[in-house]
Image (cartoon, rainbow, N blue to C red):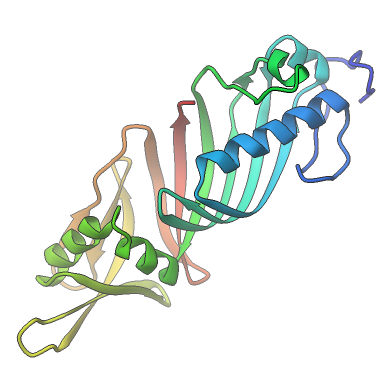
Length: 227
């Protein structure tokens, strides 16, 4: 792709991972930096972030980016620890005028992203102990274990193990569970018995598959991002 903006609208993905890698053009490089800053501002923390922009400089000047591929590691969003995120967005409407004037990137229209997010047992335990999520963890333990608060959560082979401590004899009680996607939401089901707990859903997020693999809880689906 040429740097002068005269490239055809069709062609290979453009752009490069933000953070110093070479880009196919100054405008796309500027947008990559603006998108990276915007994403980091939405999160509590991001250890590493790679972006790949899809489209051409000519399309961008017309206010359209064909999509963005994102790979992020150790993300904290609203106190929820996410070990790995791999996402691909649909086409995004962008206004490049502010970027060209040295201002922050603004995204004015909602867009859809698809992909997966992976969580470690340790990260889930810390998240469910945070004030924002503590009541959810306690509801999970009360429903499935008959005890609360939730003491910890860990992943053992192909099971999600919940633990709580009895208040009378202080005996530790554990339960093996398994995650599954049900009607777009995440449900945790006991391996023995009929106990199950469906986590409160978000209308902007649809979970299509949930599994335990590589020592992590992996969720696959789509989300609508509203700037």
